[in-house]
Every structure is written in structure tokens, then in C-alpha cells.
Amino acid sequence: MKGKATVLCENYVINQDGPVAEHGWAVFLETDHGCYLFDTGQGRGIIGNACLFHKDIASIDGVMLSHNHYDHTGGLMQVLEHTGRVKVYAHHDLFGSTYDVTDDGVETYNGIPFCREALENRGAEFVFNTQMTEIASGMYLSGEIPRMTDFEYGDRNLFVKTEHGFVQDPFLGDQTLFIRTDEGLVVILGCSHAGIVNILHHAVGKTGESRIRAVIGGTHLGRADEETREKSIAALKQFDIARIGVSHCTGYETSMRMWQEFGDRFFFCNVGAQIEL
Image 1 (cartoon, one colour):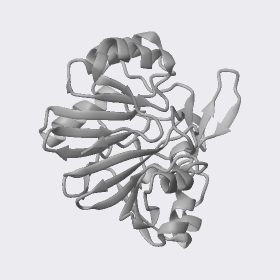
Image 2: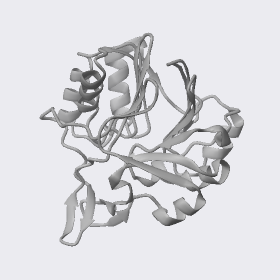
Image 3: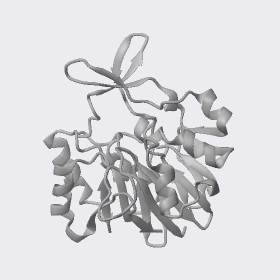
Image 4: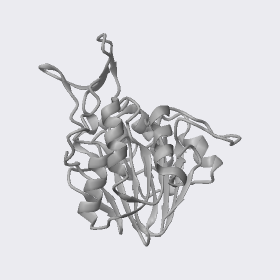
């Protein structure tokens, strides 16, 4: 596959005049098989930033959602206002009742801010998956990620509300985008709730491609303990990664550690960043 990935939503804007930053994530994909959107941010910057970077939201052939959190799904309604009927690819857990619960017991709903009926009335045609699914030739939504490591525990403050109370969110619905290119895989993360090392093992195992041209997106190591962070970085160095561009939920400390370890292969993947496919 050939084309370009442009970050439309992310936490930071650096040395650019005009774009809006927000706590969120969205990537516009231009490929030789059409245009797609991976995640939609919170909804504060998606449309304005797309216009600023001359990306036509109305032209997209599909929306892919990494998971149900508001900072990845909050812009979906605005996107649908521009696209009309369009396929929305997601895991079955998209409309789950998920919460962030602090250590002192404060509960905050963090799931998708719209009901399914409202989104379908606006034009969403949901396509749910649990297994790796080819969206277009050479572009795959990962499906559920097997847990292989013994150090990626997940965020212990993220829960699902059930009839029996809160249980830690297993994030079976956490999905990543794998894109085949002539120079290896481009891996576009959402938040890596399944664990970034687990994700890359799955990408290599399912595609048979060990070369990784680029990894971009959130690693969710900003809230991880030191053991998880250091073991994750050490494990990442065992992969054949040409470039790694972290963002969103990676955190300052983890970003600096990755820069120290990866050197000139590392970059900040903020609003406006582009990756050639």
C-alpha cells in the first residue's frame, strides 16, 4: 500500500500556526485504495484541523475506531455530519459502560459519548469485528490482541461497570491498525491498552512481516509503573523498528526515555505529523 498518514488530533501542536490541540487522537489516511480515518479525537479539533491540512473528511471510505474512550470517539458525530452514510469499523465492546476510577473512588464515565441509535441515524454503518480484518488491500484492523508478556498489566484505574459492580477493564476491544508497505509495516496505535509489546508481536505474527517501517500513536505508558515502562522499552528494542513516533498517552518521562533509547529513530508524533506509506 502507498499513501500518507496525517495526524489530525493529538495533545500537542508544535511550531505550527492554526491547528488545535486536544487530549485525543485521530489520523487521516490517504491510500491508493481510498481515504480512511483512524479514531476521531474528542471532537474539538477534528474538522477544523482537517480543513487546515486540506484533508476532505467527506471523502473518506470508512472510519476505524481503536476503542471506545471519548478521546478517540468524541468526534464521530461531527465526522458523520460531513460523510453521511459510511462504514464504521469497531469492536463489539464499543458501547460498553467504561469508567476511570481514581484511587480515592471518584468515578468518571470515559466511554463513547453517543448511543448507537443516534450514530446510525446520522449515517454510521457499524461493522464489528473480533478477529484481524482487512479493511482495504494491505490495511488491517488488528482484532483482539493476545496477551503474551508478563509485564503489561493494563491500567488499574480503568473499569467496566457491570451488574455486579466495577471490574477492571480487560480491553479486549483495544485495536490497532497494521498497514503493509514496501519497506515493512506501519503500525498505528490507539492507546495500546492491550500493551504495545503484545500489539507488535501480534502484528508480526499475523502478517509475517518482521520489518516495521514506523510505529505511531499512544503507548499508555504515561500511567504505567517503572517496571512496566522499562521492560516495555527494552522489549521494543528487540523489534526491527525504523522509526517510532509516540504521542497522546505516552507521557513526558516515557517519551524522554524512548528518545534516549531510540535516538534519531524517535520523533514526536503531534498534530500535523505525516508518515509516508
